[in-house]
Image (tube, rainbow, N blue to C red; front, side, top):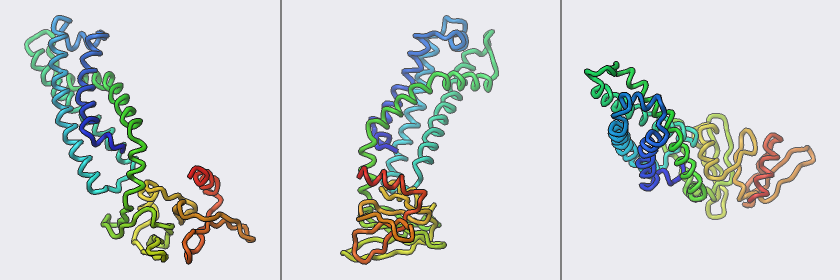
Length: 278
C-alpha cells in the first residue's frame, strides 16, 4: 500500500474527516429517516448527532492508532503479502470500524429511547445505525483513500524497486535475499524456483523450494517481468531480443556466461511494450 497510509498525517485525516462528515451531512442535509431516528422526532437531533459523532471519533482514534502501529510493523519486517490482499484487508478494517461504531451508537440510542415512545430493541438499533453509517461514510472513506493513493504512488514504487527481494520458501521462511538489480531471471524448476543472479561479474544460482506462484507477487513488485510461463526476467539486464531460425524468441542477457531466456508468444507484446518504456 502507498506509504501515506502508514503516516500519522494519513491516519489523522481519516480520524478527523470521517466523524466530521457524519455530523456535517446530517445537520446540513437533514435526511428525513435520520432526523426521525436520531432526533426522536426532531427536538434532540443536534445533541444526539454531536454525541454520536464523538462515539465515531473515539472508535476511529483507537482503530487508526492500531492500524498505524500494524502497518509500520509490517513495513519494518517487509511482509510479502500481495497488494490485493493488503487492499482487501484495508477494506475489511474500514467496515469493521463502522460495525464497532454502530454497536456503541446503538447502545447510546437505546438508552436514550428507553422509557419513551421511541423505545426499540438494541440489535434493531445496531442495524439502523450501521445502515446510516454505510450510506453516509462511504464518501469520505473513498475520497481520502484516493487522495492518499494519488499523493504517494511514485514514492512507493521507488521504495519497492530499491529494496531487496525477500525470497521465502513454502513454509514462508526467509531463505534468500537479493538486491533486485542483481537478479537476472527466475525460472520454475519442478518443486523449486531457480534464482539466477550476478555477483562480482559472475553468474550464480540459488534453488528455492517454492512455486513460481509463491514468488510471483514479490518479483512483480521489484520490477521483474513475466516472459514465459516458467520465467521472469529482469528487463534491466536484457541486451537484445531475437528470433532464432526455429522461430523461438530469446532474450539475451548482458552478463557473460548467462544463457538466453525464452519469451513465449503469450508475453511477447506486453514485454516489448514495457521494454520500450524503460
